[in-house]
Image 1: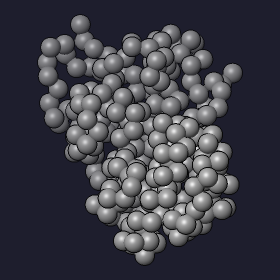
Image 2: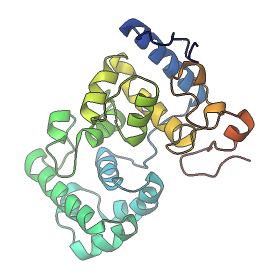
Image 3: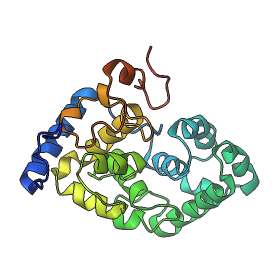
Length: 246
């Protein structure tokens, strides 16, 4: 029996074949999501850094509902460093884990002042030394605020990378390096956006819309979700936050 992606059963996929299939999937996702982008609202590197730190364990939608008030009150690293903890906690309360997130922002502001004259650094090795900032957050900031290519391995990116057969790893750093080897560096940021868009809109964790997926013919995981085209179409979302289209 030949799997849907055309690979013969029991035959390991060569590195060249894997690279070609991965890049074809990316091209098809680019057609499906021509407007793929970072879904956190921001107007500066500092705002994006703060929003990304706040996005841990909550949704981008909830962060975007909270940050207008936050950004209006705290406009610089110095503002965050000098913020009243109680006032900031009240602003961040809707996000959950608001005490820990307040603590992270206070420390973040102080570290930016101390080490970078209040400016957000534009290098990975500098960003990951900031409080509350890991490689995922650093790559979001680099790719979207500084134009430096980076792969953002969030839950969606990791899930789809495994479903596509690009990796079998659960380790974000290993996934970042393995997937980075399959694509030109210039594509890394948009690859991240497109996989995240696809994960939020089509290839859901629990009910993947396999029958309405543009890359189903190339996906070794086809069939883990709904394969009937009509039923699958009802699972699609027109945005990360919106309802399923009628």
